[in-house]
Amino acid sequence: MFRKNITFKLTFGFLLIVIISTLLIGIISLNIFKNNIFNVKRNNMTKHALEISETLKPYITENVKGKEFTDIINLLDSIDSAKIWIVDSNTNIISASNNKNMNLTYITDADVKKTYNSIFKKALIGSNEYDEIFNPYYKEYMMTVAVPIKNNSHNVIGAVVINSSITDLSNSMNNFFIYLILTLLGEIFLAGFMGYYFSKSITKPIKKINFSALELAKGHYGIATNIYQKDEIGELSSSFDLLSLKLQYTINKLFEEKTKLSNIITSMNEGILAIDTNLNIININQSAISLLSVEDWESGLKINTILSKLNIIEEFEAAISKDTKKFILKEYLSKTLNFSMSPVKNNLNETIGGVILIQDVSEKEKLEQMRKDFISNVSHEFRTPLTIIKGNLESVIDGMTKPEYIKDTCITLLKETNRLERMVKDLLNLSKLESDKLEIVFNELDVNMLINDTLRGLKPLINNKCINLQLLLENNLPLLFSDYDKLKQLLIIFLDNGIKFSPNEGILKISTYSNNKNIYITIEDSGIGIPKEEIEYLGEKFFKADRARTSNVEGTGLGLSIAKRLVKVLNGHFKIESELGKGTIITISFSKI
Image 1 (cartoon, rainbow, N blue to C red):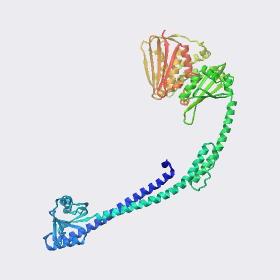
Image 2: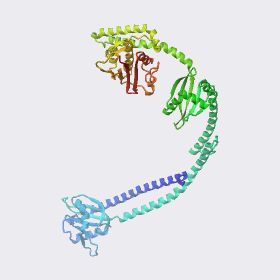
Image 3: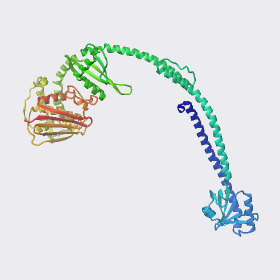
Image 4: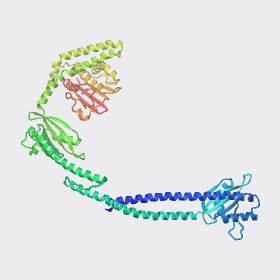
């Protein structure tokens, strides 16, 4: 509990900063102190060693056992606090004697020679050497400097080795470290006291703001902290007081808006029905009660029964489970009702229910039907042959059609013109598609020949997009009893869509095959595909799958609607399989003769 206290955290933070900064500064200072002292001592020892090498140079060439050489060694050893060794060319170590007889001492200790062997060798080849090692002869860590002794010909004839104890330097650094620890303890005490004092001055107004926030959470809107400080905490307090006043104002406004919204919903002509995930009715307006023809909204069981009969409950559950909107038209008591279902989520993005908007679209449906009946018999029937004629003419004008194929192109244009003329004559019959009164002329047809004939008319469209056309036509396919023009029109609709919605250099595959009962025609493209949830709506007049995706493609949405009815009058069936982004497969089947 104490560790969660902000006073403790701030005080501990101050102490941690002080400890880390003091230790960091102390360690850096200690290293600087050590390096400076050691460098000064090293430079002095090197300087003395060079001077000694110059002094002893004349005596090394003579008898090193002479009295004068011995006196000089003892004199230098007594002047300098360091221990001086003279190493001859055979790595023999000569040192001043520790006895009062002032004789020289020859150090023959094997450990000494082993420890200093590399230093002696480097000094005897002419280089200055330095090291800090444990001296087995004096039994302590010493700083060692070795310089060569050269004769007048600059040949190395020996070496001067100065050994100096570093105990005094280590003691100095130990004292420095002790002073650092004592200083740190003093700073911890002082920083702890000051940190606690300043932390209390910060946390006291924060606790007051916290208390006010809890009161605000209890519904005491407009509460003030009454903290007046010219710092960040004062600004926080002023912001909190402003928030409290704003919240009080907002809550009042929300109640006003709630009342307004309730009045609007009550006065709407459209029915509003709110249902939770357990299918319990939360709210319903008077318009919904009227549209569903119930006495009052308290009859929740009766309303649920009506919605279940209309299959609305099942669709509503699917909408909220899939987190999507749904629109369904239902006939109910001589009225056409449009049910718009949308899920409702809370602030955690969890679905807590849904809203059903009920609209009476009976009059709208009648007008829409009149528009569909007219446009479905005119606009798209002209578009297909005109597309083929235009494509062939553009191919000729642009020079894409070779001269030897111009006659065939003209024949195709004449055929399509004649077919267009026939369609103009058949406009009245087309208006009877849905009533099954269209005049149909059935004959025996070669399906493969019909497909090739149809593709010749669409060849310019295929070439313009560099479509890879693949034909997998079954040999000896049985003859089909059907209407040539209507079946050709049906194929053109599907092929035109396949070309239109395929990318440049896409694939268009056409296959025919049969079994014991049926003849099948499949058209497979590598186009943009159709969302699975929209496939069931294909065939409805003016419906376009994903309008946003296809807004750049011309069309009225009548093609598949006409195709659906053509398949019906030709006594066939068709199935659409599609996956968004991967293409569409259309399978048309007809019974054998």
